[in-house]
Image: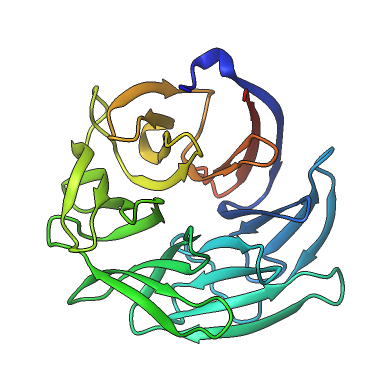
Length: 278
């Protein structure tokens, strides 16, 4: 099933004075990671999106590369700490929420997601390599690692398909693309190329959401839009709803809701919620 414009219905839009660095949905709660030095994680219920409480993640510096994902199996959240080169674990429970360091990593971690096998997938890079690394969500042990080819530099976010391939957003000095990458680190298909705003181009492809029907939603941040692609990364349609630097996208298959987090130029951030017709 393909999404068309009439399939996406705006439900809610709410703001706060800080840019959005991550989105996650767990146990009927929406978690929003914000660009702050404290109280970084804002927790909303998903019926009316009223703020319930906030969680402070000690020593987490407000870097735009930080990301957030939920882990249903462990009933927790994972946060990438770009500056400290580690992954942090959050066990939400109101005022009794627990925050701890999960693992240290030998590179700068960026985008996070959970694989079909239930592993934590981390996109990261250092001066010598660009990597996708999978970790066991219980023990923190490394399960798998993909060294990305030189043409897929500076990965910002990745998700794993059920066939074992990866969808990778990457942006460098000249290129901005989303690529379908194999275990060997080479891409099979891609959308984008030289940075720009024309048809077939993107300008900072920074985050990707993967639907159960294999359609792909990409946050094209600097072009203020979302791009919908098919499973072969062929262009379908632009999703434009007066976005301002959409920085994070999250599709929740249980509720069929699409969440978009913005990182606006003056530092404030909006979360926009859409219902996607089944």
